[in-house]
Length: 306
Image (tube, rainbow, N blue to C red):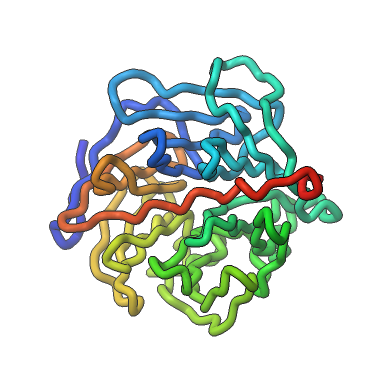
């Protein structure tokens, strides 16, 4: 089944992937999609071809991922970042201890937060946020940058309930982010070397008070795609110009998106993973994506693994 956008520029098509997904990312080196399923502590990989995705179960949930320069994967567990050096070798459904190196512990003194959304910046450093899993749902989540050169550095961004929609302009100088609970996407000037932000400003306001923001990405035209829940069981995929103007929207009735990524050989397939399960693919006319920069893990040393 397909759904047409409100300006007639794209459709979405359901795919035969029988699982829910979070943290969806395209791995250009392996030409495959990666995503997590925190509820079953599983990590999936799929080439987009016929056949089921490969699955690896862990002893605890993986919340965010990023391909590495070395060929490994950066994994964000609840309170730590790790590098997994042998992704999916001998993959299976049985939990096991992966060949992973712990890099850092995050927000260890606060039991209500876990690592949530994350993405590499254009310099190969990992920018991520935390979310409050407590019943109070207070805005106690923070944003951080991790690199092998500097370790964990906190970014001077507002506290949030649930960090989401982290992405970067093509030149890496603008950081986009959201609090999933409040529906607005924000922008800030960003310096990767200094892990500094300034010029905080609203970028895209929510369409209505019930809107939630689950993910975002930037395409080669400099436009920002936002995956939104629109209240109830519905979702919307919205494209905004570099100035924040709304350009188009794709309605996703009954399919609120949890995460998305652009991939495929020509970077022209927009993949969406649904909050309640199911994957959909879109090929917006005249739109192509940007590869994420792999996480720079080559500078790892024994002194930095702690």
